[in-house]
Image (spheres, rainbow, N blue to C red):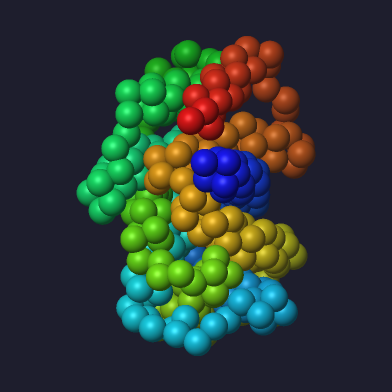
Length: 295
């Protein structure tokens, strides 16, 4: 039992780090989305991330005979993540970071649904209550404790586009658990990244060759490096690791922390600090996470 609890605790820590790292994609992505094709950006991002993960797997001796069996599994997972990242950057062309973070909080509910469909994972009343509390807290944070701003919320094209990306992301989480056949998180992530890169390259070859890479602004390369190393390579491994140890609804529940991290990113980039009432929403997300961590 203690071993199982320890594995679950490590899964929760992995997702805590995941939520902090992934939040940077929203703030940096909003500065980059209109400067480069989302498909071209994502293809190079996947290639760089695959290089980081593959090198780490080689150094750690993670590759084993038979890891490449049933390659269709990597293709299916790669398709989910490729769709998510392309649609995310497409959505950020018109939707601000806080609005996309609002859409992102729908993924735990979607993941719970896919977890039941694919794995028959049951969402208990306590988990459902935690998801509801965390969702309410996240929305409160997103709209900076401004009820008038919440009431004025209108769903634009960018939010709709990104929603479908979140559907793909939510499907990815239970699929990892269903399709993994004992491969290490590093090896499994490497396979997903390589197949995702191939799909994006075939799909967006015209955009890739049409991009004037040498003329891109510095912020594009900063965002590319951050998203490839931290928001792709590192978070993919963290997500794989956690998905093998936690139910899909619990894994994706950590997305409720993302709005809080996004606000911190926005402040770091020069945006004003939110008011004290926003801390009520942060506290609600912490309560939800406490409910989810408790076995």
